[in-house]
Image 1 (cartoon, each protein chain N blue to C red):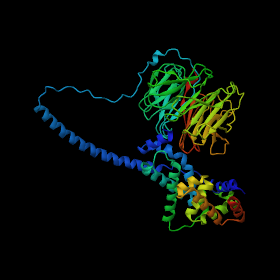
Image 2: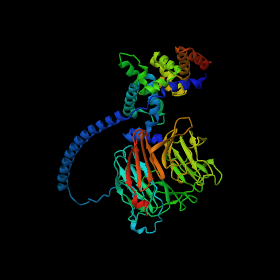
Image 3: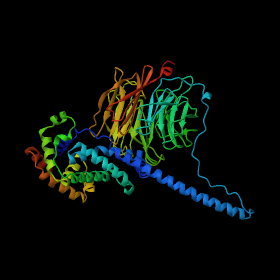
Image 4: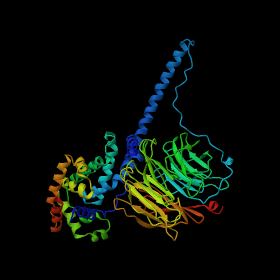
Length: 179
Length: 414
């Protein structure tokens, strides 16, 4: 039994310390995913905390031997979707991403373009780009989170990338990646 | 712009967002509520059970009073195997203790409960390091020193001192000597009964080797792994373990039946080696030289040691050998706390795939080696400064620290 499996078994039995040890390595990825999906730091924190609570409650259904990360990121992604659905207004204030204005001022125009273009995509499409290009997940893991085969995830990702309405430089970048 | 640059752009767009506050707070709240509900359910259940037992007992007494007593025999219970708790050794019996420089040590059970050693005194905190209570006063002559501290379970904790192995079976609240061998250096217990230690008489580590116990530390036997000297051992499961020494790293994947070399170095290049794994795949090896002939080096692996890559190391600041130690904080992150030339405490972190150490001076000074332990966002750091042992605690990944100073006059002036 690996350490992770040991932690999983203990967490399933209700050991909160084991649960935290098991999921702490995935907090950073989960938060990055939520920030990119929701574009607001407070909402992202909310989503990760809710997702963690759901993971804690559903852990009994998780099969030993499987990878925790895609399972947990799926919960985070679903939580982000439901947070967005629950908010009838969807004005995205990009500056909300940062608690300090210095970071916001330091942002490069290209990065602003990317954030703006991502914000205009439907959540499911944004999720594909974030998982592959931001969290560096392989398409097999992307597919495990969004559903479908790795090949389908790959072609959908490239289609979404083509759709990104970015500045001319980013369009060039997208074209190069697809080629 | 290639795919790598596009990824970089994604990171630039979002990576400046400050990390989240406690992501587990709702789980803890839910757990507390559930515990309260369980408490109510258990109380109701117990009351019901007591009523049932009373009824059964009344019926049984009535039955026994009416049944003949002949032919009844005592049936001994089958009984579960008792937990191994070694017998204590009288501290007073251990007369000849070679005094050594105090080395503050630290071990955390959770982000609330931790132990710190000051000489051979052991302190315990249960409030994230804010207040400390002496749970083991040490020897009267203050010649003792704890060289390693370890939590094994919630109840069992161990301390390797220069006069033997100290053990607690009540969550670190009381301690007793269970083995009087003075050569124990480092501990890696896998259960309350089975454990592995590094032992040796030479302070520089030239004769350190591995020992094993299966009776909770009452007795040890030699445990050869094909590496001498061996300065570190770590088990991550029943099957996977690593041992390290100046001449390399060896590993087993079959519970110790076979040990295979993974990293090999020429004799004399390094003097001390450590491994730190978070699971069977992700880990680090940290190698240092006593005479400064070789720069300290950290190696990282993502596949259980089949492949290692060098990720450099913080600059060697001349901390005492075996003092600064690598704390593995995640599958691909680690920290080393060391000292600057001006006796400032410096905390160096490695995270992600960048393979670059970032060193930040901490608002602490230390004249002797500093040690750090990490549990999630919790960091606990100890260092010796003059007559004081400084204990610094942080609950926000080391961003802000609160410090407590413990008088160590008795140890530093002996």
